[in-house]
Length: 240
Image (cartoon, rainbow, N blue to C red; front, side):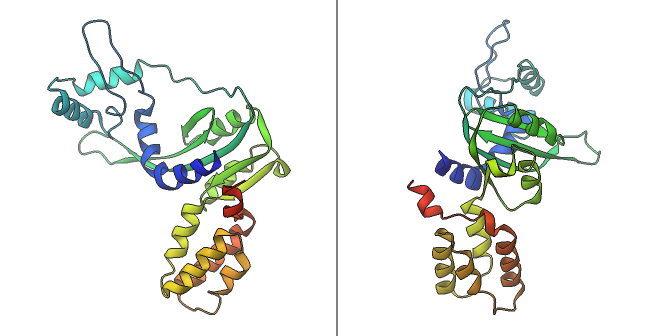
């Protein structure tokens, strides 16, 4: 399960989360009772309802106006998931989403966060307490694995979930390796550092860059120092 979360949060979260917050939960085919008005899953979640209307007409030849798309989405009740078994892993990420405004008006940006578990997804705009309260109301394994990238906002939420001794905080591999590759320079050195980090050997990986003066190397050493307690032996964890 955790392995799939490594992949999910690293490679897909930046794609899925904006979709989720714009209407991701329009997951089922809907009818309004006055003739067939159907929105395939995911099509309403296309940044703007106008885009969804164009896509549906292109794919099906049927016109479903943007206003109808809005009605279909808001017709649903989005209930928070409830865990029926102890949750072993939580993954968390966030970002910014641009809300559609009237032509000529200034764009509006909202911060969002979402937490993912085997029970489902819970997200919120600008209200971290929604996520925190939901997680603390669920049965959690001890320790519960908490997976995130290097952003402080992620770990500030995790520290409010469960107790410190009951959390295992893990820096996800995708973002760790992404930051390593930003250092650039010797490919041989990067490969060696990747091997060390995959096994959780932060000290040896950091030693490869401590003598370098360029900014990317200095920043990466600071990054490793900041998250050293969250860098695990990924190889062992993968095969446990």
